[in-house]
Image 1 (tube, rainbow, N blue to C red):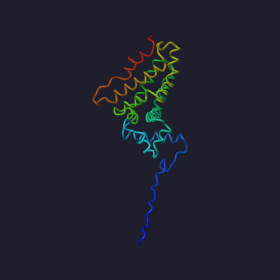
Image 2: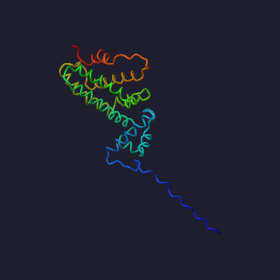
Image 3: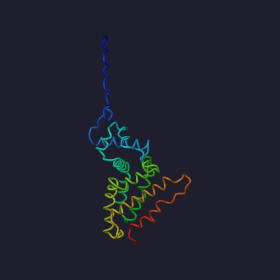
Image 4: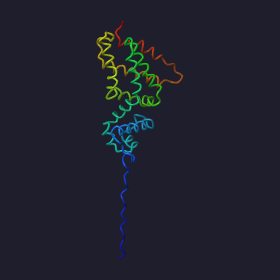
Length: 216
């Protein structure tokens, strides 16, 4: 009787997490997950990007994404925060200048919307295909809280100085201003190349600012 040798198959080795280069700390881990998310957003669009897509791009398991960010919407909120940091800083500088609150608010809003329009990456986030989810995330969570934190002291100071409409809540006013900015972005990013676009600054000056500032 001929004995048969059993061949033992070695189990396939799994790829090491983080692509054989583990992050040195939690900050680097978060940054690399956000980098992976941005790659996926540009490749697949915001709406079609899943946690699995982000995890695969970062060479980690999906539970790693959940551990650092919680949900898919949280990832998008932190991408928004990172990519709009310069835009928000510019708006805050405009609000800190001297002069009437209405003029400073006009400069801040006009400058912020213009900066987003000029950013190729932010145009991806606010494109027609991604806009619904981006706007939903921007209206809640970390991104909304950051905008409130920037606007609140200036709105409260204007209210104390009698420049703001008395019945307005500072946080509600901040949320409304974000929605207005998103509406203007949506209209301009979805417009046809040959379409005549309204003057953004004039719209803000004539229709938005009077809704915030007390009439002289």
